[in-house]
Length: 149
Image (cartoon, rainbow, N blue to C red; front, top):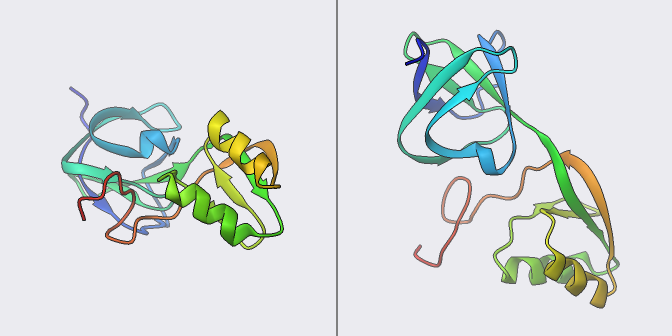
């Protein structure tokens, strides 16, 4: 069992002097109990009471109070642009697909069905590799996976 254990999260920590950093994909930033490794190779155990959705800038709080900063990893995404971005975002949201919403574009995880739909709606879609920080749900921090609000 690793010496370093985290049983708490500090939101928006942006730690000035973290013990380390841990770069995780969007999917990997959704966890409850998992053995992780910092970017420098130090193993630590995350053992949270509930499953949590972590964002870039949050931190794992170790039992001694030290912080390990969460960093969002660059990953393959689809960039969507178009004249009616609001309409395109509505169609993505209607399918409960995580979406990063920016002023001039949307970012989603690769999905051939939504890619085809976006093209049919006149959007320009291209593959990119970037950090993915989608909008959280309206009913709480992070992700929403059901209608059970």
